[in-house]
Length: 453
Image: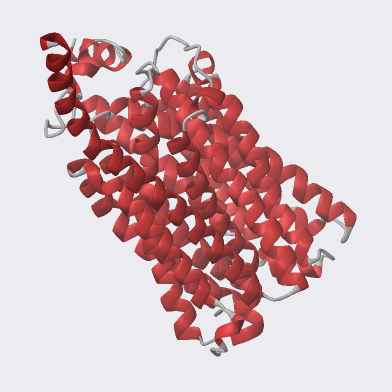
């Protein structure tokens, strides 16, 4: 009888059970929420560990197979481009498809593609290898977008009063995946060759499919008539999306170029390159939960987190090379330190973006429910993916034509522009809010004067 009551509670996602369980931010988590949190955490961890294993060794392996630096950037970039398209479509139709089915099927597709990617060293060099890389990565991207779009929407649905806190806490598992992926991938590649990293982690991701089928609750909701185009009619959302774009383009740029730069400049092995990337992932992983809690407790800090985070990220990229005009010699300790600055500042900027877009949508008449959450989640994933496409593509091109130092400088310039535009917007918004009470206080006196006259 108790089991039936639990299952009924899980199914009533839009009913009173969910509303009572999420009515207070300080209320103890229900079984429904705990199961959802476990499921989303497993998705974030398993998906990101499979995504991040390529960085330490794949660019070098692709060069051996006849791919240029620009083609390598396009291979990384096509993943993001297909992720973009998948996020838009799946975010729009998450209610019709079903959030649980979307998440589980995305995990299955991504696991199969990860295993297939490990077999590419058996194919002939040149065009065959490159074409198959594009095909497998593209299909993998659609699966990844399905899992991540659903996970964002479900997290916000189940924890409406603690979105930033929950997303920040879940970024621990995202960060762990990013942290463990490069060193594990680099070590497995050095010890056992190209196939084993993809086979091992692909099978691990596959095990997450039955796990999530068992523990993830089902979700029911009504479709909405709102669209992505309506979201983009608001300047605040456009500027936040530009900030998201600069963040993801920076990460994509580092994925495609940092390993080759570190190997050529400091003579590091793929295993040590994986450890080098810890300097980026570890600060992000540790800072995200704290920044999420602060964002929920003090929502007024979110805008300035985004602005300051963008400025720190720009500084990190400018000194990562460093900028050639500074004539500072590149040193390994400086690279590690700047990666740490970038990782911390990424969390400052990224954590507040999702709740800020969601609040702006609700303030402008969007319906509260899974449909709007799917739209915002899909928009976030699409913009992030567009940055992950442009970062490796343009970054790889600039690196090949000029140098890694100049490419990092351009990336820093984009981050600075995003922070500057957001800062100007929030200052103007604050000025309007301060003037509004004065205007309201002046109106009664004017009306009284007219009446007396």
